[in-house]
Image (cartoon, rainbow, N blue to C red; front, side, top):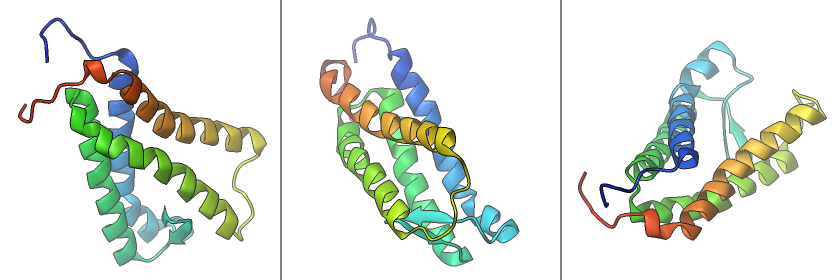
Length: 142
């Protein structure tokens, strides 16, 4: 990447948020141990057992850490994560709302805020990266 190019503030913010989300997914196993009503949601199904939560949370955390690293370093390969992630998040949300039998934990405002952040972060980042591919480097190391 050219030394005169800098990472846009939006991408810096998203890299930090993806890292925070990865940490959240890694700690889901402790959340489940302390609050069995929590858990990780994959394909719309909330997993509340320790082993599935640890495996799925760890796997998703690795994907998110790779995504954050690719965004932080402005690497072109990050598009291979960003585009599938932009489809994964809405699919997971729709399936969760379809399968959810519990009453909602937050009201309409909370729901809309979460929806804005989840879809804006996943789809918005993929669109931003796609439309600004000229900012991304194809370097492998670094």
